[in-house]
Amino acid sequence: MRHAQTAVLERGERYTGGFATEPYEVAWAGEARFFVQVVDGAPGTTAVLTTQLSPDGLTWADAEDAAPREIDGATAGMVTWRIREFGGWLRLRGEVRGAGDEGPKLRIYLVAKE
Amino acid sequence: MSVDLGETGEAVRRGTLAANPALSRFSPLPRILTYDDFNTGTNGWTELIGNYDGNGNLSTVDDHMRDFRPPQLSNCTFFDTGTHGALTGTYALKLATRPYVGHTATAIRRLTMARKGLVQLETYFTYKAEATLGTDTANNSFGGVTWDGNLHPSEAQFGALTVATDICGDGGLRYHTVMRYRNTTVDNELDRRWVYPVVPEPTPREHLEGKAKLAYGADFTAPDPADWHAASEPMDMCFNEVPTKVNWHYLRWVIDTEARRNVELQVNTNVLDLRDVPVPAYAERYDSLDNLLNFYFSVRTHSGVRNFLYLDSVLVSVDW
Image 1: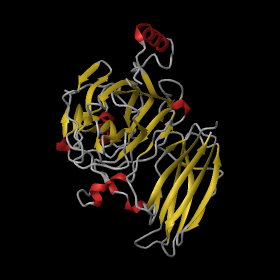
Image 2 (image 1 turned 90 degrees about the vertical axis):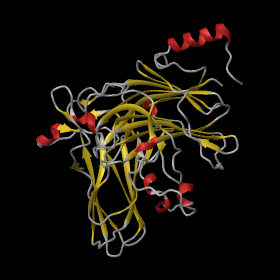
Image 3 (image 1 turned 120 degrees about the horizontal axis):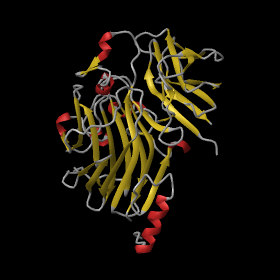
Image 4 (image 1 turned 90 degrees about the horizontal axis):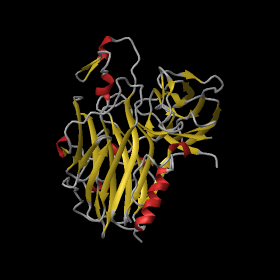
């Protein structure tokens, strides 16, 4: 059987500006997929999400073949994308645009497979 | 049902264990309940979370129990030397905190009891604080430790690691057995003692009943540092100088679910008799937990630097 693992990187934080998820080790995996879900929306907001890679969990670069993804932060919804050949570590760099005092509540899943 | 192999059977059992490279480094009781080699996956060790309402609304989870972080399968890679690997094979289970003072990462394994008696958990583990990269000379000193070519301030940036249970039976009588290596106090001073809590862990029901409300980053096992008592004198470990060298430690912990007691803790050459260490039970009974037998590991940062606990393998055995 192929090993597979789902990690809930963020469970429902509200974001109003820039953020990054915690480093997550996936050296064992050959493929992965992010799911970013707006659990509770904030009017007029957009979340822009960029996949990042790292050789050591300390220093990060944008993935060269994964364009930033956008999701409407106003209403409940979900966006997903795949990534391969990512080395040992994955995280998301995010930016919520248009937020006032309260941004959208996001849930972020990383699903990795051998 | 209890295991009685007789003299010959016991000799065969011991010989079989000794001849098995994966098991010969353990000293299991007669029945192996679980053997977790993290080269084969997470083996049921998963993130702990507090309880939530009937709508799956995770905003109803207690603040101090909503962010224990997902365990990772790590090949123990570091910035200076690359992949270290585990004690055996490539992968270890890694618990990683956030860089936030008081944050705790927790992995739990959920079983039930088919009988009561001795339960023994063995593991090969190591612990680290995240390496700091930069140019600030202030980073050469932390928590009273100054880099001298041997000692490294990273050692004082590691807070505590904990191995514990959550057990319930006999009509809802619930208790935890808990052993913590308190590397530093919450004030970041080296302590290096094994400690245990004298109060039961605050539960979501107690919060709902208005008895407990803890903040994010609170110590979920026992929030008041005064409620942790020493089970040992300071015990040196092999942190090995810098945050990027990994030396695996052996731990063997025995409890008695019949007597609801701790029994013994072995860490490398040190053996602690824990039979006089109290195990506080909840005053109220709990439903839906009959024969609960959970094990958890946690790691807590007192410095705000990410803290890591790595487990190469875990073996749980019983005398049933």
